[in-house]
Length: 596
Image 1 (cartoon, rainbow, N blue to C red):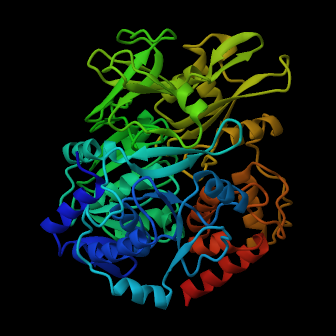
Image 2 (cartoon, rainbow, N blue to C red):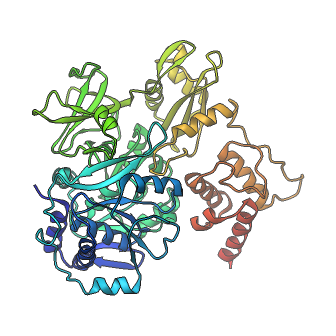
């Protein structure tokens, strides 16, 4: 079996002059990227990096980030992504737990104070040392030990149920089947452009990276503010003529699909792809729906192309070299159409959780259907298999709650609401401190093409669900709160349901301007913030993020400013404004500039 550097180097040999990475106005071809990675790899080997040795990487989005990752893998090591924006305590835990032998960072990353030897990219003396190294491919003989598929490739930390992050240790074993699946499904050709959207701290980043660089494509990178869902993301994709992209439904739901990825592909992953989203994004491009937790090499199954008219959007069939079982509580194989827990097996399964043997043993269990000694991963996800072998995600095993003494699967409530043609995204939560006050609250992002009210959706639910499962309230949202990996933040929705009244969607209570007096930008923006955040007390000296906003909601605010005020405020300014009054000043200055 081959390891990742083998696949990359084969592309270098085939298309050395083709663009490999685009960042701003910088374009680097395959031959140059390969040579830069080889030089850095030799410095890493000399410093002790080799198979099963971790290297922490703290490098912002840039060509240097790609060079660093390739260099670590070429040296035989595994990379540990560190996001400098993360809290220091979390980064410290990751480093103490993973024990990397080296930190690779850039000169502008100065916030990390880790007791680890480091290489500083951009430092003149270090860059000069790299230039003295050979740019030819690193051979097995040069590595500290031969690199095999069973060796570590990366360790990515995910949140843990106990509040302590856990590191998922992934090897090279699944790379061959990942590349095979990508080639079969997407068929990326040299010169085609793949958007690098996901954060480096998540395994979706690795998908973007490999979809481009292990298939001869060009990886399109951009600053974070240029990738914010909505108009910024749309403009970035149009500007760089992106052909392939992967994003979660929450990002797709607030980005206009018109004119994007024509003839290319879009893959929805990370949350449920609804009928409404499928109908929108299947026009003019191939739409796929992917599934797979961090505990496998990026994914386990993929469905598509999706036609946008099917009743339920499937997660498709297993990747090459992968198996997805639907099992009952006794690990019995369930028949077609019966819900059970999804167990994942095959070449892409992770080694386990780093330094967590107990947790690894509880989640990575013996595979009774595989060869002797094989394992499978207990995902905690529920699903079913259709008559044609297509898989369908139906919720979480632990998404079961009790409401007024009745046992309720919130996934069933969500599935019913998702079946309405006007619903793009829905999340159901339970609110209430005691049994007498518990109620189901459904948060819904409606389709822009269809009008619907909360009462109509409750009636739609009542047509198929018993009364105790019908939501007490349906709250419409333009944007969902998200985690750093783009997935919907369900805990935030639970907290909103606990603290907001059932009429939380009512307009804010900011005092209107006197009769005949034109509203100021401060008043207008305060009213917008009240409506977006579902509050009634936004004042000019308030900070949008302190009030509960986040980057996706900021993108929504920017879109409203553009559509209602006719002023296009750059996302960099939206994110950087200290308070609403400062943002109002930015809007006013931007308007004057646009009119000049």
